[in-house]
Length: 95
Image (cartoon, rainbow, N blue to C red; front, side):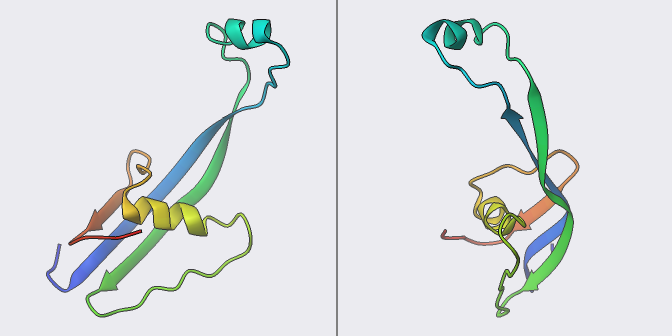
């Protein structure tokens, strides 16, 4: 990483797994420990790339559900990116 680049993002992807089955009773909840049921994948971010240099400002603008908070949580280290993604942060990030 260059010294002037503070954040480097290449091919950043984030996918969440969502369990679509609703548990209505304790028995269903207990049996779901052994049988996970239907799982759907939700792609929050796909192929995001950016370079932020020292002294630059970053503004993230988009519609609801476009992945703004997910991107910021990835940069802050709250979420881990999917395999194959590159996210390098030099220095400290305070969410």
